[in-house]
Image 1 (cartoon, rainbow, N blue to C red):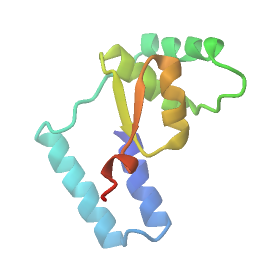
Image 2 (spheres, rainbow, N blue to C red):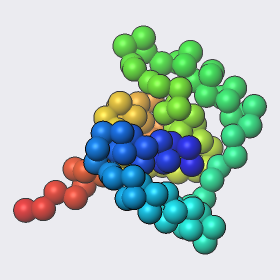
Image 3 (tube, rainbow, N blue to C red):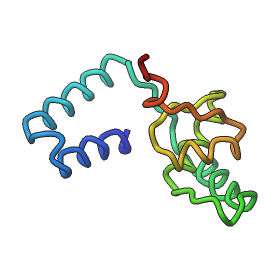
Image 4 (cartoon, rainbow, N blue to C red):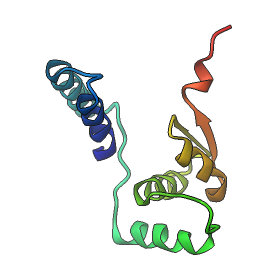
Length: 111
């Protein structure tokens, strides 16, 4: 949830959203959440520990932010086999978590 809102804020900061558009997007997101559109996986100490331990198995050359690691461990725990994102680093890390990374930008190429 926090990551989604952070993306909205990044677009506000970068000038891709006006303040009014940011507020509208934020309110729409809150409404969708209240309607059950989004499903949240609880973060607990076990999940955090699993994410921390996963770094022991990773190559030293792999760049993986802690929030991305948490996303991948959460998705794996929930039984997902695919992760959809446009974040290249997150997508590069997917195979290390036995996940398929699908680039949402590349998947919408039109001929």
